[in-house]
Length: 117
Image (cartoon, rainbow, N blue to C red; front, side):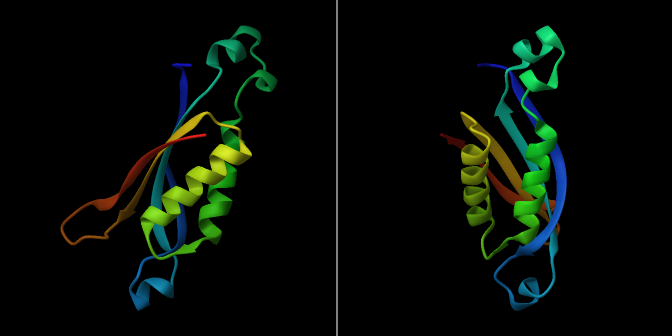
């Protein structure tokens, strides 16, 4: 399946980081998701029942990340990918998590991973 849905720039606040000050206050992370979707099938009938509901995926991502408390952004990425693959029966997912202001003089730092079921 070559067709994909993407969600770009999902802004979520969570506890992430190894420094003591990072463990006390939620910080902003930006999440981009991309996953295969039955676009042609959904378009044929113009019916949400035939589509992958990306609103639900975004909502579940927001809930998962906002409740998380990981030290490493790598761990957050792995656990988020696992959850999305399992709960939404996705064949694969590409996700990018960036942490604005993580490195002085850089817009952001982060990780991008691709995982399959």
